[in-house]
Every structure is written in C-alpha cells, then in structure tokens.
Image (cartoon, rainbow over all chains, first blue to last red):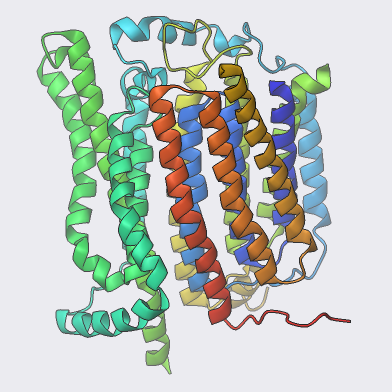
Length: 338
Length: 118
Length: 103
C-alpha cells in the first residue's frame, strides 16, 4: 500500500511542474512553487525522511515563497511571451531525458533492503550511533558528529549568502527623525486596515518563537535541529515585520546586532573545532571535549546546533529586511532621476 | 513490476527535464530561478527514494524497531536544501539589481541593451 | 469499548476526506472568487478538525493527544485569519463580487 501513495504524489508533482511551465503570471508561479514544496515535503514523510520533510516544509514552502514574493514585488509580475517556439531546447531535453531513462534500467528497484546504497557505511552508523554518541536521532548524530565537516561548510555557505545579499541590496537606514514620522503615519494607516491580522499575530508570535526553541533543543530526540529552528525563528520575526511595518520591526530587532550574531554563530561552530584541537584530538572531534566521551559528544552536538540555529535565523532575517527595505530606495531613485 | 520499481526514477527524470527546459527556454529571469528550484527538488526526491528501505521506519532509534531507513541520504539532502535556498536568495538579489540597472528582467531586452548591433 | 472508539475514529477520518473532496469540487463549480473562498475557507477548517479528532480517537496515547489538540487549536486560529486576509486583499484591490447571474 505504501507504493500507491508514492505513485499518486509523484504524479501530482509532475502535473504541478507542467503547470508552472505554462503559466504567464509570476504570482501564480510562486504560489505553485509553494504547493510543489509542500507536496515534496509530504513525499519525504512517506519515504520515512522526517527531518528532511520538516526542513523542506519550512524552507521550501515557507521562506522560499516569501523571498520570491518580495522579489516579484520589486521586479514586476508578468512574463512577456517569447517570440519564437523553442524547438531546439525541446529536442535537447527529450534526448537527455531518453538517455537518462536508459541509464536507470540498471538501477536497483525501489525499497530493496540489500540495495548497494544501504550496505556499506549506513549499517555501521545505525549500529554504533547509540553507544558511541548516545542520542536517538540517527540523522542528527550523522549530521553533527560523523559528518560534522559538511555541516560546517553549509553554515559558512549560508553566512556567505547573507553577506552577498547585504553587499548587493543594503540601503542606508533612515535617520531617527524620519523614522519616527514614518512609524506614526504607518501605524495609523495600518491599524485600521489590518486589525484582525494584528490581533491574531500578537497572540501567535510568542508561540512561534517558543516552538522554534523547542525544535532547536529537541533535535536529538525527534525530527528537528538547528536549520529548522533557525527558519521558524526567522519566520516569526518576518511575520511581525510584515504586519507592523518595517521601521517598527527595525526598532524591535536591531539590525547591527543581527549582523553581529550571524557571524557569532559561525565563530561558535569553528571554536568547538579549535577547542578539540587544543585538547589533543582532531578538528571537530568531540570525544576529547569532556572526560567522558559520550558526554563530550552531547555537548559538542548541542553547541554546534546552537551555532547553526543562530546563523540561519539571523541570515534569513537579514535577507528579508534587505529585500523589503529596497522598495523605498527604488521609488526614491526614480523620482531623483526625473 | 519493472514499472512499479523504477517509476520514481522516471518521474524524477521527467521533473529534471522540465526544470532544465524552463531554464533554457524561458526568457524571464525569475522564471529561470523557479526552474532551477524544480530541478533541485527533483534531485532531492531521487536521493531520498534511493534511501528508503521497504518495511523500515524513520531513522530515530528505538527498541521497538529493528529495520531503519538509510539515514545517510537524509543528511546530504538536509545540507542541499539549505544551500539551495541560499543560492536562490543570492540569485533573486542579483535579479533585483539587474532590474534597477536595465529596467527589465527579460533576457532578450537585456541583451539588446548590452549589444545594440546583435 | 476500544473497538467502538477506533471505529468512530475511522468514521471521522473518512468523513473528513469526503468533505475535502467535495470542497475541492466546489472550487471548480463556483462562479466567483468570493464564493470559492467560502467553499475552501469554511470546509478546510472543518476537514482539519475532523481529521485531527479521528487521529485522537485512533491513538489514545498520552502526549500524542496533547500535541494533536495543540495542532487543532492552532488551525482553528490560523485558517479563518488566512481566509479573512485573502478576502480583504481582494476587496481592497477592487475585485467586485458577481451579484447577478450572467446569461
């Protein structure tokens, strides 16, 4: 019976992808991308990949939709039609697809226990994880301890993306006097328009932040961990900024502090590795952090997940504030050119 | 039987090719980024399908279960999802700056502004 | 007694799924944005409620019931707000409801 659900969801994914190709309105395309992300998250749950499903639902169906919506609000909503028919592209794509299908005829069938992917390193991780590291979630133990280098690289990549967006899109923040006037006029206008939304979000934002903290610290015992928690935390701040105005949100969450904190997360991760070196082990070897190796693993994983969560949350907040703050800059520039 | 066993790989290839087609054939820059996202997600689906074990459960160790799905592809795809969103954010920032400099995000109009003779 | 509760749970799950399909058909058949909002907004909350209650009746285990009821509470708060936000955005951008039958 598991195979029936997985065939249905894959067919739905294919239909959504074909619909995205044919649409001319970018808002509809972004909404369908959100649907695509949510369908793939359900597919990952059926494939027993609960951590991945959590990340795809929060990142792919949440933050990605918000970023694309802010981008199309800055660049425009419609797609101009192409003059000619892209026949060459279609032929190339069909040939490549045919060759790939021919290559899959050699692959092992879905779900076999003795497929080569399940035979070499993974049984060792599954057998030894409980007594070497001592946490139930095998994905967190592989991510944070056995393959800690890759996760370090990933955190640095997120930090680099934050720096890149800051370099491309940052706007000088307004002076305090302009700021106060802006806040007063925005507050009066938005309070009547968005009364219901403001009341409900004031109720919900503390729970969203609390849920983010829960996901961060329970990553050892169930699905969760640093990435998902960082994204959920950033989503709460983004909700506040959307409903109460960007200037009010800048006062609540001071941007220089957020920029400092994003670098502190990467520094925390690297320092855990350096402390392991100073204690006589290899880089990111948690066994030497404390006298008892299993306790050392626990504290190593806790600290690096904290570093990951802090960096991801602050980078997502930086990216959103820079995209949304660019709106006024574009209008100012156009009026100056005229 | 072969169709049931290999169906997921064929759907993954179809999604990859749709993503590739959108990147090559569409002129709008944001739609190209959307095509890139479809391509990335299809690769994630491929890896996670390879890691599934029939009769296994999610890789959270408990005494009641003995057969687990493979945790290694899950770790790789977790990293890949987050790197994907980082590159998408950077790509969208570049598109916003291109719009401000050239006034349009259609590939043909940008090329005309760069190379009027072409 | 447990069998009756388990069957009641299955009945709730089944009723929720059938209602979801009906509201999906409603999106196609209704003529206008606001009537479609009505089809989806009202029945989505009811469907989620029925499915969560069906799951609670099927797994009478301690902490799982608390988590499922929290999900139900959050859905009851968030779904109507989202429908309100969509309808308000439509009215404020000028979309008028169709009040007469087009011939």
